[in-house]
Length: 257
Image (cartoon, one colour):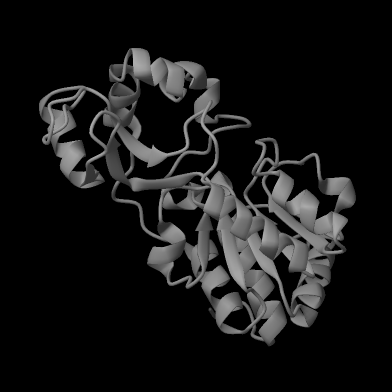
């Protein structure tokens, strides 16, 4: 870790140590070390696939097979939480984070043990039929998809089984958005991890927090549009940086946590 990175980690640790209403805001980068590909930036999925073909609601309604073929080849259902997820659980346990607001749909924050998680883009762990509104576990529909792509609804025979995630062209779930906005307006520190901060309205959450006086700490592999607004910016892998951040806060040497 470079001297500049160590300084930024120390700055972030000092801010979080004083936080009374801190929140985390996470994107795909927090799950990369769990084997789930990120979307934007170098090597991201959207550099290989057109998101408006595989993940747009209008395309889905015309031809759901494009999404389900993509899912068949690229979904990682066996992913496990990594040290970044566990570090956020520890920050919550220590009382420095009130909640995790995530753009991710993988459920790894909950599996790691985070108690308060707001999923701005929904969850990939269930599926809804757009015809009859019946819901099914994702693993059940994945099995059906392996047998016949795209899968049909077991309840009505409809052809539009959609994961309960927010596709391009869809609105964010209103309850999740309102809860995230309320937390942002009350936050004193926002720890941003693994987000390009380019996808709106989700990226408006850290901006809203900053407008209401919160300090921003950014941990990301690449620069973001919010770097100039942040009190601390750390470039690196979330699974390496966040455990170091926690160790700095609790005074443990490297190798612990």
